[in-house]
Amino acid sequence: LEKNEFELIESRFFKKTDVAALCPNGVRLFFKNENVAAYNNFVLSQCEDKVVSTSTDVIIGCKNHEQEANFRIKLHKKSVIDTGGLPYEITFVIGKYYLITTNIDVNDGLCNGSAGKLVYLEFDESYTLIRVWMEFCGSDKVGRKKRQKGAALALRNKVSNLAVPIELRTANISLTSDRKVVVKRKHFPLIAALAMTIHKSQGGTFEEIVYEYSKTHSQELVYVALSRVTNIENLYIVTSDDSTFKFYHNRRQATSTASLLQEFKRLSLNCVQTKAQSVLDFIRNRNGVSIMTFNCQSLNSHKYDLQDSVTRQTNVLLLSETCMSNDYPIDIPNFNCIVHFKRDTVSKGGVAIYQNNNNDTTNIMTPNIDINVANDVDVNVRRTNVGDICACLCKLQNGLEIVIVVIYITPNPKLDEVEYFIHRTLLEYTVEGSKILGGNSHKFPLILAGDFNINFADKKSERLTTFLLEKL
Image 1 (cartoon, rainbow, N blue to C red):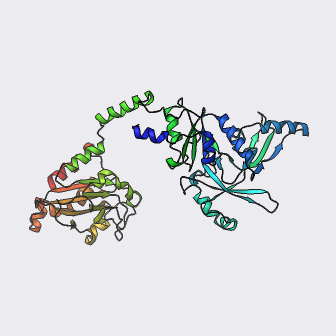
Image 2 (image 1 turned 180 degrees about the vertical axis):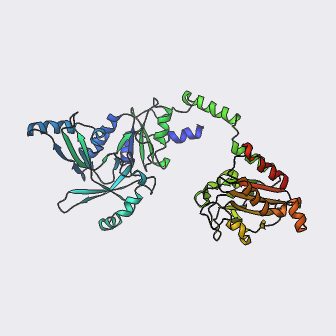
Protein backbone atom coordinates (compact mmCIF):
# COMPACT_ATOMS: atom_id res chain seq x y z
CA LEU A 1 0.00 0.00 0.00
CA GLU A 2 1.03 3.61 -0.57
CA LYS A 3 1.54 6.05 2.30
CA ASN A 4 -1.73 7.88 1.63
CA GLU A 5 -3.59 4.55 1.62
CA PHE A 6 -2.19 3.66 5.05
CA GLU A 7 -3.21 7.09 6.31
CA LEU A 8 -6.73 6.62 4.96
CA ILE A 9 -7.19 3.23 6.63
CA GLU A 10 -5.67 4.37 9.95
CA SER A 11 -8.00 7.39 9.94
CA ARG A 12 -10.84 4.89 10.41
CA PHE A 13 -9.54 3.62 13.79
CA PHE A 14 -11.77 4.54 16.77
CA LYS A 15 -12.18 3.75 20.45
CA LYS A 16 -15.00 1.35 21.30
CA THR A 17 -16.80 3.96 23.38
CA ASP A 18 -16.76 6.40 20.46
CA VAL A 19 -18.01 3.75 18.02
CA ALA A 20 -20.92 2.92 20.33
CA ALA A 21 -22.17 6.48 19.81
CA LEU A 22 -21.05 7.00 16.19
CA CYS A 23 -22.25 3.68 14.80
CA PRO A 24 -24.78 2.01 17.11
CA ASN A 25 -26.43 -0.03 14.33
CA GLY A 26 -23.38 -1.04 12.34
CA VAL A 27 -22.64 -4.74 11.86
CA ARG A 28 -19.77 -5.92 14.05
CA LEU A 29 -17.18 -8.28 12.57
CA PHE A 30 -15.26 -10.54 14.95
CA PHE A 31 -12.77 -13.34 14.46
CA LYS A 32 -14.27 -15.73 17.07
CA ASN A 33 -17.80 -17.13 17.44
CA GLU A 34 -17.88 -16.48 21.20
CA ASN A 35 -17.32 -12.74 20.60
CA VAL A 36 -20.16 -12.76 18.09
CA ALA A 37 -22.58 -14.49 20.47
CA ALA A 38 -21.63 -12.25 23.38
CA TYR A 39 -22.18 -9.06 21.39
CA ASN A 40 -25.50 -10.20 19.88
CA ASN A 41 -26.88 -11.21 23.29
CA PHE A 42 -25.69 -8.04 25.00
CA VAL A 43 -27.11 -5.60 22.45
CA LEU A 44 -30.45 -7.36 22.07
CA SER A 45 -30.88 -7.58 25.83
CA GLN A 46 -30.46 -3.80 26.10
CA CYS A 47 -33.12 -3.02 23.50
CA GLU A 48 -36.52 -1.92 24.83
CA ASP A 49 -38.72 -2.38 21.76
CA LYS A 50 -38.00 -6.04 21.11
CA VAL A 51 -40.13 -9.04 20.25
CA VAL A 52 -39.00 -12.49 21.36
CA SER A 53 -40.17 -15.26 19.04
CA THR A 54 -40.02 -18.90 20.17
CA SER A 55 -40.25 -21.89 17.88
CA THR A 56 -43.23 -24.24 17.87
CA ASP A 57 -41.88 -27.73 18.58
CA VAL A 58 -43.98 -30.89 18.33
CA ILE A 59 -42.13 -33.99 19.54
CA ILE A 60 -43.27 -37.35 18.19
CA GLY A 61 -42.22 -40.76 19.54
CA CYS A 62 -41.81 -40.12 23.29
CA LYS A 63 -43.17 -42.72 25.71
CA ASN A 64 -44.08 -40.30 28.51
CA HIS A 65 -44.00 -36.65 29.57
CA GLU A 66 -40.75 -37.07 31.49
CA GLN A 67 -38.96 -38.40 28.42
CA GLU A 68 -40.38 -35.56 26.35
CA ALA A 69 -39.11 -32.99 28.87
CA ASN A 70 -35.61 -34.47 28.70
CA PHE A 71 -35.68 -34.39 24.91
CA ARG A 72 -36.77 -30.73 24.97
CA ILE A 73 -33.74 -29.84 27.09
CA LYS A 74 -31.56 -31.70 24.59
CA LEU A 75 -33.29 -29.95 21.70
CA HIS A 76 -32.75 -26.46 23.12
CA LYS A 77 -29.00 -27.09 23.31
CA LYS A 78 -28.69 -27.97 19.63
CA SER A 79 -27.07 -25.48 17.28
CA VAL A 80 -28.90 -24.00 14.31
CA ILE A 81 -26.85 -26.28 12.03
CA ASP A 82 -28.47 -29.33 13.67
CA THR A 83 -32.03 -27.96 13.62
CA GLY A 84 -32.50 -27.38 9.90
CA GLY A 85 -31.53 -23.72 10.18
CA LEU A 86 -34.41 -22.94 12.57
CA PRO A 87 -33.34 -21.52 15.99
CA TYR A 88 -35.28 -22.07 19.20
CA GLU A 89 -35.51 -18.38 20.01
CA ILE A 90 -35.08 -15.15 18.04
CA THR A 91 -35.08 -11.65 19.50
CA PHE A 92 -36.40 -9.25 16.87
CA VAL A 93 -35.58 -5.53 16.95
CA ILE A 94 -36.55 -3.20 14.11
CA GLY A 95 -33.50 -1.75 12.35
CA LYS A 96 -31.17 -4.60 13.32
CA TYR A 97 -29.54 -7.05 10.92
CA TYR A 98 -30.46 -10.72 10.63
CA LEU A 99 -28.95 -13.60 8.69
CA ILE A 100 -30.88 -16.20 6.66
CA THR A 101 -29.91 -19.68 7.87
CA THR A 102 -31.31 -21.87 5.10
CA ASN A 103 -31.88 -21.75 1.35
CA ILE A 104 -35.32 -20.23 0.82
CA ASP A 105 -34.98 -19.58 -2.92
CA VAL A 106 -31.44 -19.66 -4.30
CA ASN A 107 -32.50 -18.33 -7.72
CA ASP A 108 -34.09 -15.35 -5.98
CA GLY A 109 -30.96 -14.65 -3.92
CA LEU A 110 -32.61 -15.74 -0.66
CA CYS A 111 -29.98 -18.24 0.39
CA ASN A 112 -28.07 -19.33 3.46
CA GLY A 113 -25.82 -16.47 4.61
CA SER A 114 -27.78 -13.57 3.07
CA ALA A 115 -27.96 -10.66 5.53
CA GLY A 116 -30.69 -8.05 5.69
CA LYS A 117 -32.13 -5.35 7.93
CA LEU A 118 -35.42 -5.95 9.74
CA VAL A 119 -37.94 -3.24 8.78
CA TYR A 120 -41.33 -4.60 9.86
CA LEU A 121 -42.97 -7.32 11.98
CA GLU A 122 -46.38 -8.60 10.88
CA PHE A 123 -48.81 -10.11 13.41
CA ASP A 124 -52.20 -11.79 13.03
CA GLU A 125 -55.35 -10.89 15.00
CA SER A 126 -54.19 -12.90 18.03
CA TYR A 127 -50.87 -10.99 18.02
CA THR A 128 -48.93 -14.01 16.79
CA LEU A 129 -45.91 -13.14 14.67
CA ILE A 130 -46.61 -14.58 11.20
CA ARG A 131 -44.20 -12.75 8.90
CA VAL A 132 -41.10 -10.56 9.05
CA TRP A 133 -40.03 -8.03 6.42
CA MET A 134 -36.38 -7.36 5.59
CA GLU A 135 -34.40 -5.15 3.24
CA PHE A 136 -31.24 -6.65 1.76
CA CYS A 137 -28.37 -4.27 1.08
CA GLY A 138 -26.04 -4.63 -1.87
CA SER A 139 -28.58 -5.48 -4.58
CA ASP A 140 -32.28 -4.99 -5.21
CA LYS A 141 -32.21 -8.31 -7.09
CA VAL A 142 -32.27 -10.21 -3.78
CA GLY A 143 -35.84 -11.33 -3.15
CA ARG A 144 -37.22 -9.70 -6.32
CA LYS A 145 -39.62 -12.59 -7.05
CA LYS A 146 -40.67 -12.72 -3.40
CA ARG A 147 -41.37 -8.97 -3.41
CA GLN A 148 -43.49 -9.23 -6.53
CA LYS A 149 -45.61 -12.02 -5.04
CA GLY A 150 -46.03 -10.09 -1.79
CA ALA A 151 -46.70 -6.67 -3.34
CA ALA A 152 -50.32 -6.60 -2.09
CA LEU A 153 -49.22 -7.55 1.44
CA ALA A 154 -46.54 -4.85 1.39
CA LEU A 155 -49.10 -2.24 0.37
CA ARG A 156 -51.50 -3.36 3.09
CA ASN A 157 -48.78 -3.23 5.76
CA LYS A 158 -47.38 0.06 4.41
CA VAL A 159 -43.84 -1.24 4.09
CA SER A 160 -41.18 -0.23 1.58
CA ASN A 161 -41.36 -1.72 -1.92
CA LEU A 162 -37.80 -2.97 -1.30
CA ALA A 163 -38.87 -5.06 1.71
CA VAL A 164 -38.92 -8.85 1.30
CA PRO A 165 -41.37 -10.99 3.31
CA ILE A 166 -39.83 -13.94 5.19
CA GLU A 167 -42.29 -16.68 6.11
CA LEU A 168 -42.30 -19.38 8.78
CA ARG A 169 -40.69 -22.66 7.75
CA THR A 170 -40.73 -26.19 9.15
CA ALA A 171 -38.00 -28.77 9.69
CA ASN A 172 -37.95 -32.36 10.97
CA ILE A 173 -35.19 -32.91 13.55
CA SER A 174 -34.14 -36.39 14.70
CA LEU A 175 -33.47 -36.64 18.44
CA THR A 176 -32.33 -40.29 18.43
CA SER A 177 -29.91 -42.17 16.20
CA ASP A 178 -32.65 -44.58 15.09
CA ARG A 179 -34.93 -41.60 14.26
CA LYS A 180 -37.76 -42.96 16.38
CA VAL A 181 -38.06 -39.65 18.23
CA VAL A 182 -38.52 -36.71 15.88
CA VAL A 183 -39.44 -33.10 16.48
CA LYS A 184 -41.28 -30.98 13.95
CA ARG A 185 -40.08 -27.40 14.42
CA LYS A 186 -41.77 -24.32 12.95
CA HIS A 187 -39.97 -21.00 13.03
CA PHE A 188 -38.28 -18.28 10.98
CA PRO A 189 -34.96 -19.25 9.32
CA LEU A 190 -33.13 -16.27 10.83
CA ILE A 191 -30.50 -15.49 13.44
CA ALA A 192 -29.29 -12.14 14.75
CA ALA A 193 -26.51 -10.61 12.68
CA LEU A 194 -25.68 -7.55 14.74
CA ALA A 195 -22.31 -9.24 14.83
CA MET A 196 -20.89 -12.08 12.77
CA THR A 197 -17.60 -13.76 12.11
CA ILE A 198 -15.47 -12.36 9.31
CA HIS A 199 -15.71 -15.71 7.53
CA LYS A 200 -19.52 -15.63 7.68
CA SER A 201 -19.63 -12.10 6.24
CA GLN A 202 -18.05 -13.17 2.93
CA GLY A 203 -20.29 -12.30 0.00
CA GLY A 204 -22.30 -9.73 1.97
CA THR A 205 -22.26 -5.94 1.80
CA PHE A 206 -23.40 -3.60 4.57
CA GLU A 207 -24.08 0.10 5.00
CA GLU A 208 -21.97 0.29 8.19
CA ILE A 209 -19.23 -2.00 9.51
CA VAL A 210 -17.34 -2.12 12.81
CA TYR A 211 -14.34 -4.42 12.48
CA GLU A 212 -12.31 -5.60 15.48
CA TYR A 213 -8.86 -5.60 13.88
CA SER A 214 -5.80 -7.58 14.93
CA LYS A 215 -2.34 -7.73 13.43
CA THR A 216 -2.50 -11.54 13.80
CA HIS A 217 -5.32 -11.79 11.24
CA SER A 218 -4.31 -13.17 7.86
CA GLN A 219 -4.12 -10.72 4.97
CA GLU A 220 -6.99 -12.54 3.21
CA LEU A 221 -9.17 -12.18 6.32
CA VAL A 222 -8.40 -8.47 6.61
CA TYR A 223 -9.34 -7.97 2.97
CA VAL A 224 -12.72 -9.66 3.53
CA ALA A 225 -13.45 -7.52 6.58
CA LEU A 226 -12.52 -4.19 4.98
CA SER A 227 -14.39 -4.87 1.75
CA ARG A 228 -17.81 -5.59 3.32
CA VAL A 229 -18.76 -1.92 3.65
CA THR A 230 -20.21 0.09 0.76
CA ASN A 231 -18.47 3.36 1.74
CA ILE A 232 -15.20 3.85 3.64
CA GLU A 233 -16.80 6.72 5.58
CA ASN A 234 -18.99 4.07 7.22
CA LEU A 235 -16.07 1.81 8.13
CA TYR A 236 -15.06 1.81 11.81
CA ILE A 237 -12.01 -0.12 13.01
CA VAL A 238 -11.48 -0.97 16.68
CA THR A 239 -8.89 -3.05 18.54
CA SER A 240 -9.22 -5.34 21.54
CA ASP A 241 -6.88 -3.20 23.70
CA ASP A 242 -8.48 0.06 22.47
CA SER A 243 -5.09 1.76 22.14
CA THR A 244 -2.89 0.67 19.21
CA PHE A 245 -4.24 2.41 16.12
CA LYS A 246 -1.76 1.11 13.57
CA PHE A 247 -2.49 -0.89 10.42
CA TYR A 248 0.17 -3.60 10.18
CA HIS A 249 -0.85 -5.39 7.01
CA ASN A 250 0.62 -5.02 3.52
CA ARG A 251 3.63 -2.98 4.66
CA ARG A 252 5.65 -5.57 2.81
CA GLN A 253 4.65 -8.29 0.39
CA ALA A 254 2.98 -11.18 2.19
CA THR A 255 4.66 -14.57 1.77
CA SER A 256 1.25 -16.11 1.07
CA THR A 257 0.86 -14.01 -2.09
CA ALA A 258 4.49 -13.77 -3.22
CA SER A 259 4.47 -17.10 -5.04
CA LEU A 260 1.13 -16.24 -6.63
CA LEU A 261 2.43 -12.91 -7.96
CA GLN A 262 5.53 -14.64 -9.31
CA GLU A 263 3.33 -17.13 -11.13
CA PHE A 264 1.24 -14.32 -12.64
CA LYS A 265 4.44 -12.67 -13.88
CA ARG A 266 5.69 -15.95 -15.36
CA LEU A 267 2.39 -16.52 -17.15
CA SER A 268 2.41 -12.97 -18.55
CA LEU A 269 5.83 -13.63 -20.09
CA ASN A 270 4.83 -17.04 -21.47
CA CYS A 271 1.46 -16.50 -23.09
CA VAL A 272 -0.29 -19.61 -24.36
CA GLN A 273 -1.42 -19.17 -27.94
CA THR A 274 -4.94 -20.56 -28.29
CA LYS A 275 -6.22 -22.06 -31.53
CA ALA A 276 -8.83 -19.32 -31.73
CA GLN A 277 -6.16 -16.63 -31.44
CA SER A 278 -4.04 -18.37 -34.09
CA VAL A 279 -6.99 -18.33 -36.50
CA LEU A 280 -7.74 -14.68 -35.70
CA ASP A 281 -4.13 -13.71 -36.35
CA PHE A 282 -4.26 -15.59 -39.66
CA ILE A 283 -7.43 -13.72 -40.71
CA ARG A 284 -6.14 -10.29 -39.68
CA ASN A 285 -2.79 -10.74 -41.42
CA ARG A 286 -4.37 -11.61 -44.79
CA ASN A 287 -6.07 -9.29 -47.27
CA GLY A 288 -8.33 -11.91 -48.82
CA VAL A 289 -11.86 -13.05 -47.99
CA SER A 290 -12.23 -15.22 -44.90
CA ILE A 291 -14.77 -18.03 -45.32
CA MET A 292 -16.13 -20.37 -42.65
CA THR A 293 -18.22 -23.50 -43.27
CA PHE A 294 -20.47 -24.89 -40.55
CA ASN A 295 -23.07 -27.67 -40.27
CA CYS A 296 -25.80 -26.08 -38.16
CA GLN A 297 -28.12 -29.02 -37.53
CA SER A 298 -30.91 -26.40 -37.33
CA LEU A 299 -29.80 -22.80 -37.67
CA ASN A 300 -32.66 -21.55 -35.52
CA SER A 301 -31.40 -23.64 -32.59
CA HIS A 302 -27.74 -22.71 -33.02
CA LYS A 303 -27.70 -19.17 -34.44
CA TYR A 304 -26.31 -17.76 -31.18
CA ASP A 305 -23.46 -20.28 -31.32
CA LEU A 306 -22.18 -18.24 -34.27
CA GLN A 307 -21.08 -15.41 -31.99
CA ASP A 308 -17.59 -16.58 -31.05
CA SER A 309 -14.56 -14.38 -31.71
CA VAL A 310 -13.53 -16.23 -34.90
CA THR A 311 -16.98 -16.20 -36.48
CA ARG A 312 -17.40 -12.47 -35.81
CA GLN A 313 -14.23 -11.79 -37.86
CA THR A 314 -15.26 -14.03 -40.77
CA ASN A 315 -16.43 -12.36 -44.01
CA VAL A 316 -18.61 -15.17 -45.34
CA LEU A 317 -20.48 -18.04 -43.63
CA LEU A 318 -21.31 -21.18 -45.63
CA LEU A 319 -24.00 -23.00 -43.65
CA SER A 320 -25.38 -26.48 -44.27
CA GLU A 321 -28.30 -28.41 -42.74
CA THR A 322 -29.95 -25.12 -41.80
CA CYS A 323 -33.52 -26.55 -41.72
CA MET A 324 -34.55 -23.02 -42.74
CA SER A 325 -37.70 -22.22 -44.67
CA ASN A 326 -37.29 -20.66 -48.12
CA ASP A 327 -39.78 -17.95 -47.19
CA TYR A 328 -38.26 -16.69 -43.94
CA PRO A 329 -34.47 -16.43 -43.60
CA ILE A 330 -33.19 -16.56 -40.04
CA ASP A 331 -31.42 -13.50 -38.65
CA ILE A 332 -27.86 -13.97 -37.41
CA PRO A 333 -26.49 -10.99 -35.43
CA ASN A 334 -24.04 -8.93 -37.56
CA PHE A 335 -24.67 -11.01 -40.72
CA ASN A 336 -26.87 -10.59 -43.82
CA CYS A 337 -28.43 -13.58 -45.53
CA ILE A 338 -27.34 -13.39 -49.20
CA VAL A 339 -28.89 -16.58 -50.55
CA HIS A 340 -30.46 -19.69 -49.06
CA PHE A 341 -32.28 -22.78 -50.26
CA LYS A 342 -34.01 -25.89 -48.94
CA ARG A 343 -36.03 -28.48 -50.82
CA ASP A 344 -39.71 -28.22 -49.94
CA THR A 345 -40.05 -32.01 -49.97
CA VAL A 346 -37.85 -32.63 -46.89
CA SER A 347 -37.96 -31.38 -43.30
CA LYS A 348 -34.19 -31.30 -42.78
CA GLY A 349 -31.34 -30.16 -44.96
CA GLY A 350 -30.99 -26.69 -46.39
CA VAL A 351 -28.04 -24.42 -47.20
CA ALA A 352 -27.32 -20.71 -46.87
CA ILE A 353 -24.65 -18.07 -47.44
CA TYR A 354 -24.32 -15.11 -45.06
CA GLN A 355 -22.09 -12.05 -45.36
CA ASN A 356 -20.65 -10.16 -42.39
CA ASN A 357 -21.94 -6.59 -42.26
CA ASN A 358 -19.97 -5.56 -39.19
CA ASN A 359 -16.27 -6.17 -39.73
CA ASP A 360 -13.95 -4.71 -42.36
CA THR A 361 -15.08 -6.06 -45.75
CA THR A 362 -13.49 -3.43 -47.98
CA ASN A 363 -12.07 -6.22 -50.14
CA ILE A 364 -15.62 -6.97 -51.33
CA MET A 365 -16.66 -4.40 -53.91
CA THR A 366 -20.42 -4.98 -53.94
CA PRO A 367 -22.44 -4.39 -50.76
CA ASN A 368 -24.18 -7.71 -51.32
CA ILE A 369 -22.86 -10.80 -53.04
CA ASP A 370 -24.65 -11.51 -56.32
CA ILE A 371 -26.72 -14.69 -56.50
CA ASN A 372 -25.47 -16.90 -59.32
CA VAL A 373 -27.23 -20.26 -59.04
CA ALA A 374 -30.99 -19.75 -59.03
CA ASN A 375 -32.44 -22.84 -57.40
CA ASP A 376 -35.89 -21.37 -57.02
CA VAL A 377 -36.63 -21.81 -60.72
CA ASP A 378 -34.89 -25.18 -61.07
CA VAL A 379 -37.67 -27.77 -60.67
CA ASN A 380 -35.31 -30.73 -60.83
CA VAL A 381 -33.19 -29.35 -57.99
CA ARG A 382 -36.24 -28.72 -55.83
CA ARG A 383 -37.49 -32.28 -56.29
CA THR A 384 -34.22 -34.16 -56.05
CA ASN A 385 -33.59 -36.56 -53.19
CA VAL A 386 -29.84 -35.95 -53.33
CA GLY A 387 -29.41 -32.64 -51.54
CA ASP A 388 -29.47 -28.85 -51.50
CA ILE A 389 -27.13 -26.33 -53.10
CA CYS A 390 -26.81 -22.57 -53.48
CA ALA A 391 -24.07 -20.26 -54.71
CA CYS A 392 -23.01 -16.66 -55.18
CA LEU A 393 -20.41 -14.61 -57.01
CA CYS A 394 -17.96 -12.70 -54.83
CA LYS A 395 -16.18 -9.73 -56.43
CA LEU A 396 -12.91 -8.71 -54.80
CA GLN A 397 -11.42 -5.23 -54.75
CA ASN A 398 -8.68 -6.28 -57.18
CA GLY A 399 -11.34 -7.27 -59.72
CA LEU A 400 -11.08 -11.03 -59.17
CA GLU A 401 -14.41 -12.86 -59.14
CA ILE A 402 -14.83 -16.05 -57.10
CA VAL A 403 -17.77 -18.45 -57.22
CA ILE A 404 -18.69 -19.65 -53.73
CA VAL A 405 -20.91 -22.74 -53.45
CA VAL A 406 -22.34 -24.44 -50.36
CA ILE A 407 -23.85 -27.92 -50.58
CA TYR A 408 -25.67 -30.39 -48.35
CA ILE A 409 -25.97 -34.04 -49.41
CA THR A 410 -28.58 -36.31 -47.83
CA PRO A 411 -26.99 -39.16 -45.77
CA ASN A 412 -26.12 -42.46 -47.50
CA PRO A 413 -26.01 -41.03 -51.03
CA LYS A 414 -25.23 -42.90 -54.23
CA LEU A 415 -22.08 -41.50 -55.81
CA ASP A 416 -23.58 -41.58 -59.31
CA GLU A 417 -26.48 -39.42 -58.18
CA VAL A 418 -24.19 -37.00 -56.31
CA GLU A 419 -21.98 -36.55 -59.39
CA TYR A 420 -25.00 -35.97 -61.62
CA PHE A 421 -26.51 -33.52 -59.11
CA ILE A 422 -23.34 -31.42 -58.83
CA HIS A 423 -22.54 -31.62 -62.56
CA ARG A 424 -26.02 -30.56 -63.62
CA THR A 425 -26.34 -27.73 -61.08
CA LEU A 426 -22.87 -26.27 -61.71
CA LEU A 427 -22.75 -27.07 -65.43
CA GLU A 428 -22.12 -23.41 -66.30
CA TYR A 429 -18.79 -23.52 -64.43
CA THR A 430 -17.45 -26.61 -66.21
CA VAL A 431 -15.42 -26.48 -69.43
CA GLU A 432 -18.14 -28.39 -71.31
CA GLY A 433 -20.90 -26.16 -69.94
CA SER A 434 -19.10 -22.96 -70.88
CA LYS A 435 -18.65 -24.20 -74.46
CA ILE A 436 -22.34 -25.12 -74.73
CA LEU A 437 -23.46 -21.80 -73.27
CA GLY A 438 -20.84 -19.80 -75.11
CA GLY A 439 -19.41 -18.21 -71.99
CA ASN A 440 -16.23 -18.32 -69.94
CA SER A 441 -17.63 -19.03 -66.44
CA HIS A 442 -15.33 -22.06 -66.20
CA LYS A 443 -12.44 -19.63 -65.69
CA PHE A 444 -13.85 -18.38 -62.38
CA PRO A 445 -12.07 -19.77 -59.29
CA LEU A 446 -14.67 -21.90 -57.49
CA ILE A 447 -14.94 -22.76 -53.78
CA LEU A 448 -17.21 -25.72 -53.01
CA ALA A 449 -17.88 -26.42 -49.32
CA GLY A 450 -20.52 -27.99 -47.12
CA ASP A 451 -21.57 -31.37 -45.77
CA PHE A 452 -21.29 -34.20 -48.30
CA ASN A 453 -22.08 -36.96 -45.76
CA ILE A 454 -19.35 -38.92 -47.54
CA ASN A 455 -16.15 -40.37 -46.11
CA PHE A 456 -13.54 -38.98 -48.49
CA ALA A 457 -10.88 -41.15 -46.83
CA ASP A 458 -12.64 -44.24 -48.15
CA LYS A 459 -11.18 -45.53 -51.45
CA LYS A 460 -14.71 -45.88 -52.82
CA SER A 461 -15.02 -42.10 -52.64
CA GLU A 462 -11.89 -41.42 -54.69
CA ARG A 463 -13.95 -41.27 -57.87
CA LEU A 464 -15.94 -38.31 -56.48
CA THR A 465 -12.72 -36.46 -55.60
CA THR A 466 -11.41 -37.12 -59.12
CA PHE A 467 -14.71 -35.95 -60.61
CA LEU A 468 -14.61 -32.66 -58.67
CA LEU A 469 -11.00 -31.98 -59.65
CA GLU A 470 -11.51 -32.73 -63.33
CA LYS A 471 -14.93 -31.21 -63.92
CA LEU A 472 -14.91 -28.07 -61.73
